[in-house]
Amino acid sequence: HGFITNLNTSIPWEVILINGDFSDSLFVTMASNAAMNPYFLFGKLTPVFLLFKCSKTPDAMYKNIIEFDEELCSKHPEVFYIPESYDDMLYRLRSLEKE
Image (cartoon, rainbow, N blue to C red; front, side, top):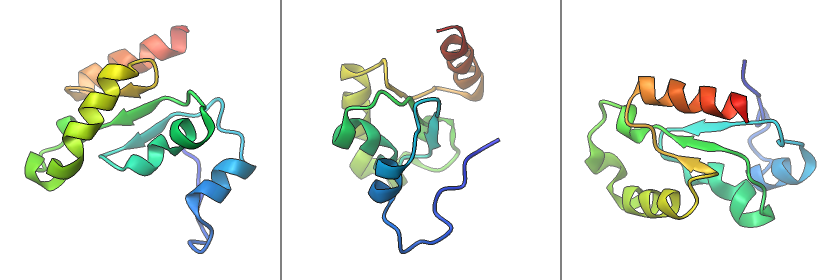
């Protein structure tokens, strides 16, 4: 049902991460690398779904980060996922529930 984190936008996302427990969370974004901060900054294995392949938005919009995201996902598939479709996303979510 979601988690509302940043009602006060003057608080940086990293401060919210330091003060929150996101161990049972899943971050979902079109292509924002901010969702990767739990892993990069704190070594937390919070799953991240990057949905840019599920979008009808042209890849050119995300051109600068798609290569980075794809490389990262190939190196750390236990944390970062790029679903190919809505059905693929559901399949991956179900597999996380079983873990």
